[in-house]
Length: 175
Image 1 (tube, rainbow, N blue to C red):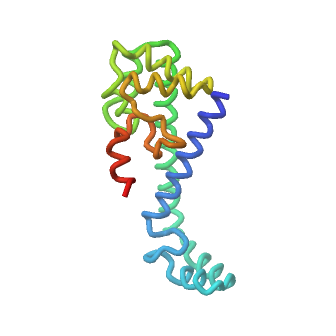
Image 2 (cartoon, rainbow, N blue to C red):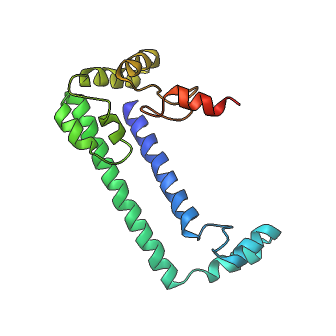
């Protein structure tokens, strides 16, 4: 079950990374600034024109750009997987120093380092174990104890652990 959850997280990260590359590169289907003939074909529903436009856009230069993007995404994915492996190993062994080092000072995981200390790391490990076993009520209780106001998901406004406190979200969502 734990392995499936990790694979799901990595897959979701990859999908987001690919989508962001397409969206911000101007090369995505239908993006203005990308292949305008392909965009026009999509808007008119003309498959043959779209296919021709897409094939015309397949150049060696474009291949080199896509190959560089792919290589960079693969590098980032490998770095994320290595970091997650270190974080998980530190949690499994209850090693706060290794966890703190693996989490680092930047990136989404670093927000936990602002709340989790050597003194409350055992509670964090317990919360993580409760989440892994599906005991989300216990995990929520421990998260509140730690100062991590939300576990995300239903009712969590998608913030994830360590997101803004409920007061700041509820005031912006209650109109």
